[in-house]
Image (tube, rainbow, N blue to C red; front, side, top):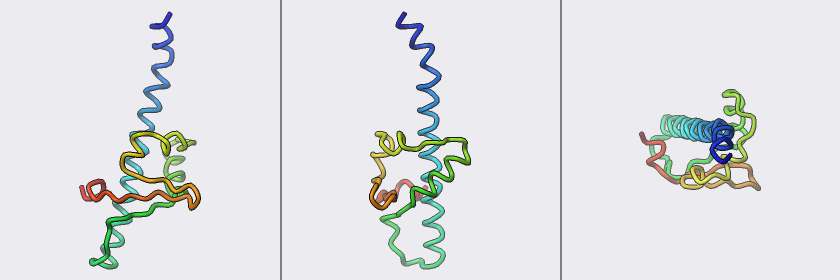
Length: 101
């Protein structure tokens, strides 16, 4: 019975994992783009702390047919690299290695 349940729910577990990986990629892309624009307008700007509006991530998620990002924003993968400020609805990153690649 346990194996049957694992098989039934495996697709949902894998789907969530795949969505989190895609959202992490999308978020890193948003950060890289913001850093690129900041550096183009002011090469001396400090890009250590990058702020992304959650609205922008939600918009990109919907483009990729992901309708909720709440689980991702609470996930370990997200919290390793980012901080979600719920009050301001922004995502902060202070890890240069994410967007310097």
